[in-house]
Image (cartoon, rainbow, N blue to C red; front, side):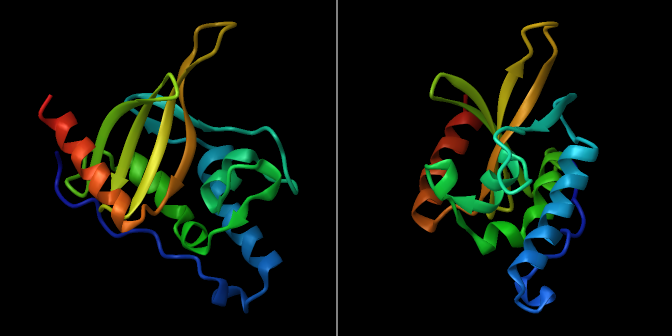
Length: 165
């Protein structure tokens, strides 16, 4: 592992847009678009891509999963803490070898997931993918969120089990 990964990208706060939700969500989306649509980070030497479909309000599904909560696609609720940290997602992925970032693998719903936990604050979930037509392997950004304190206990146990083999 390397030393410190440097300074986190700044939070993007609703107050920075004078409380204007439309202006704010567009500002948050601009960061997501830059980090995952215009270009993609790499994790374990494979590209990380976001889920594009379904498009909702002109924005990719992967964006909504990183900025809102809920099980029903059309009923997700905005999560300001996720929105504020949108710039941290790529930062965490690109600094996965840093001492402030924990990474491990688990299986969920029959898929291999890679978890990237930045400073025990932001958890990024990536799924292994393989395109059928040509075998291209990549990671899909599933979500990123701030785990509740009670869930952090479970994540720490899972991470520690993974480290100990």
